[in-house]
Each structure stands twice: as structure tokens, then as C-alpha cells.
Amino acid sequence: MVLSCKHLRQGGHDAQKLIDTFASPAPVLLCSAVLADDPPIEVFEVAPGRARIFVVRGSRLAYQRDKPGIIVYDLAARKELANFKVNHELEDVDGDFIVTNGKGGEQIETLNVKTQKSQIITGKFPAGVKPNSVIEMSGDWFMFEWLRPSSPTAKQLTHKYAFNSTKKDLRLLTEEPATDCHLAGNIVVWCGAKGEDRTLYMYDLSTSKQTTVAATPPAILANPATDGRRIVWTETFPRLYDISSGETVMLLDGKEEKEEVRQAVVSGDWVGFSGSNSGVRAMHLPTRKIFTIKDPQSAKPLQGDIDIGDRYLVIRRGAGLACAVLPDLGGDCTQGRGRVRGDGVRSGKTAPYPASPMSTGERSKSAVLAADCADDADFRAAFIRPSRP
Image (cartoon, rainbow, N blue to C red; front, side, top):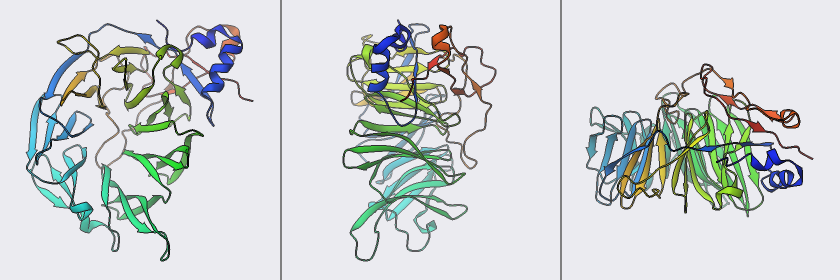
């Protein structure tokens, strides 16, 4: 079953109407996708008890229940690595470190999974900087909020900053209201809001360059996530932005979806979706295959919040957590979300997705999206660039 390119392949006014419906500042490409049933997706239970907060980076899962304590779990080895009896709030996990927030930001700590030792990092921030909370970490970079007045007479505003604890490098990311902030590798993404308008921004810590990824007049742009090389978000239906090529792709076509996708996450060549009716699914970008993640007992689609690292898609299943092990179909599935401690995102070759067979008229509109591995023979995704006025 083809999910996306049908309307464009039919041509005519219907195709242009579909394009105009999902128009954005940059040309949007549409990706064809195929439902897949094989190989079956293995799902195993991780946390039977209630997990109030959870986050995945690579094969590491960190989660927190209502009672004090933060648990770190190895999804590849399927075993618990650490159980920290702390009262702090879990913020993020990165390799062998987790970061916690206590006393309203007055005591931010990193906890070492291997040594079981903690280190208070609040004092590492420049004099006068008082973070309210650390949102995420990547290597030596910490992204945090700081409630401060923009001037002595102005009201307090929550500014977003990035700080490198080794180089003592402090960056102001935005002074405007911002939500859904995420950091992976050297890439920071967030949603800026002015009234009902929503704008998705990207900031590259290695180049100090800010880029506008997408903008929408109505408040439908939400939930951005990044692995350091790609950005996904929901705009009624999920979209993907390839950082190296600058191309935007609409991954699923709402005409067939018949429902909104409320959350999308990305790791290497895998994108995870969560919707209210169809449940949790995963798309393998090079082959365009989509897998529905099902409960191993009931065989019904799982539903709930999701996060992803490497080929491990973690789902909030009732009160606990379940993990779907995505199949190895080639391409890059090992980087996780770009969380390489100390040296940013792992470098890799780039190559275009070869186009699927198209008519002469379609071929004139075709475009390529940068991929991550030059030697993957399974790249089959075809994209159609819509005409712009």
C-alpha cells in the first residue's frame, strides 16, 4: 500500500492542491512509503512499574518513577546498570552520564553510571549565571533555561542558553518564548512562538549559525526532535529536515493517514511515529518501510509516548515501558541521536537517495535527499519537488 506519492503521481490540480495545503517557507518533498509486516518487530518489557519520566540516548534508557530514584538501563544487554537513590528530577542521559535538577535549578548534578559518583556542576557556570533547569546535555554542552530580566526595568523572561563546561563557552540561543527545545551533537532545535505563529529554529554550536527550518501561521508546528543530522516534527503530519542538504520531506500523507501524528522521533535511518488511532509505528528511511509496533500478547498496536536511540524504540505502555527492537535493514542505525560524548556528532559519508522510476514529467521535478551511508544499496526513496509560485 502506497501512503504518500499517489496524489502527485496522478498529477493535475489535486496534486497541486495537496502541495499548497502543506506549503511551508522551503520547498517540501513528499516521500513514498510502503507498509511492511516482515521481519516481525520484537517487543520486550523494560519497566513494569510506572515510569513518570524517561529518555533514550543510544542504547541507554534512563527513567524515573514517582518515588525517589533514577534507573539507568542498557537496552542492548537488557539489564539495569544503575539505580540512583536521589530526590532530583531526571533531565537527560548521555553515554555514561545522566544530569539531574534539584532545588529548582540551584543544584544541578551529573551522575556517572560506571563510578556511581555525582558531581555538582552548578558552580561551573559563569559568575552571575543562575540556570533554572538544564533541559538536555550532549558531550560537554548543556542547554539550560535562565529566568532573568532583559533589562533592569523589564519583566523577567526565560532565556535559553547553551554552555560548554570544558571550554567555558556560553551561548545565548534565544530571548523569545521558546518551547520543545532539544540538543543532539552540535545541533539545538526549538519552537519559537509569537501569538499563534510557530517557527522551528536550528542552531549549530560548531558554526554559531541559526537557521529557520519551518514556519506556520497556525499553531500546528510542534514536538521537534533531532539526532544531530536530521530534524523531525509534527505539522499535523510528520516532516523531516535533512541538515546537510537543507531539504524538507513530508513523511506521511494525511489523505491516507486519516488522523494526526502527535509525536515523531528520529535516530539514524529510523523515524518513530505515535498517533491516536494507528498507534506507534517506525519508518526505515532508506527502504521506506513502515512497521506497526504491536503488543506481543494482544497483537494490537501499542500506543503512548515514545523516544528512540539506535534501533531501540521505547514506548510508554500503560504505566510501564516497553522496547521495540527495530530490524537491521542497512543504512545507519548505530549512531543513536547524535549523542557522542566529548566530540559531537560522528562524521559520516553522504550520498543521495536514488530516485524510483518516474514519468518524464515527474522526473523533471525530482530531487534527492542526503543520506548517511554511500554504500547502502537499499536506498529507494523517491521525492517530488512541488512547484512554487
